[in-house]
Length: 304
Ligand SMILES: Nc1ncnc2c1ncn2[C@@H]1O[C@H](COP(=O)(O)OP(=O)(O)O)[C@@H](O)[C@H]1O
Ligand SMILES: [Mg+2]
Image 1 (spheres, protein in one colour):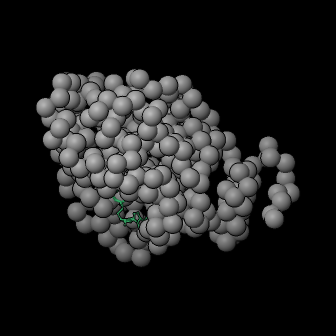
Image 2 (image 1 turned 60 degrees about the vertical axis):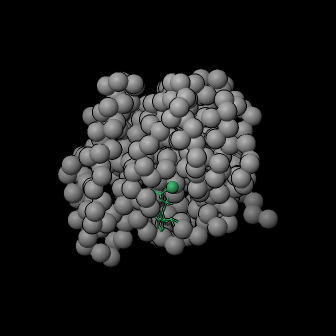
C-alpha cells in the first residue's frame, strides 16, 4: 500500500517550480488518493451556484460534478442538486437514481424534505447529492399548476440544515423552463460553462435576459459570476478564437483555467465516478482542481 512520506498537514499538491508535467500528474494523483490535498478556505458565505446554459452538451453536468468533487477533495462540504431528469450528475457521483428512487421530483412536487432524499456520493468525502430520476421529466407540467411555482426549490433548501455546507451546485436541464427557473431563484451565482466551438455564444443573450428577469422580479442578489471554457482543444485555431472572443466579451468573469477536451473526462461517468477519482493525474482532473481553486479564491476576491 502507498504510504505518504510526509505528514498529513503538509499538502503535496502545491506545484514546485520547473516540475515536468508527468511529475505533476503523479504528485496530484498521489495527493488525491491519500487525501493529502491542500485545504481550501471556507467561503465567508455559503455559495449557491447554478450551472446553467440552455444549450445541451456544453459541459454543465461534467462541470457540476467535477468542480463539486474538486472542492470536496480540498476539504469543503458540497451539496449537488441534480435537476436534470437524465440524472447524469447522479450517475457520475455514484448515487442511485432509478425510476421511483426518492429524488428531486419528490422534493419539488411532493414537498418531501431534502434530508429524506439526500445521498452521500460514492467515492468522495464531504459530498452529498439530491439525485434526479426520470420521474422529474414530467415535473415541470405538474409544477406549472402549483402555487409559488418558482420558489419550490428555495423553500425546500430553507427547510434543510445547510449550516455545514460551503457550496451548493445545481445542475440544470438544457432549457430555461421551470426547473432552471427554480434553480436561479434559489441561487446567488450563475456559473456558465461555454464549450469552445463555433456557436459558443449562441443562446447566451437569452440566458442573460432570463437572469436579468430573475434579478428584477424574483431574486435581486443573483449574479452571473463565473464563466468556464470547456472542451478546449488546443490543436484547433477555432478553440483559441472562441476563447479569445469569450474573454473579450466577459473579461474577468472568465476563469483563467480552461478545461481541455480529454477522453478520461467523458469515460469517468460510465464508472460511476468523476474524473477526479477515476484518473486524478489526467489533464481534465488537474484542470478541474485548478478551476475549483480559482472559484474558491474568488469568494475572497470577487471579480470586478
Ligand atoms: N472536457 C471534456 N472532455 C471530453 N468530453 C467531455 C468534456 N466535458 C464534457 N464532455 C462530454 O461531452 C458530453 C456533454 O457533456 P455534459 O456535461 O453532459 O453536457 P451538458 O450537461 O451541458 O448537456 C458528455 O458526453 C461528456 O462526457
Ligand atoms: Mg447535463
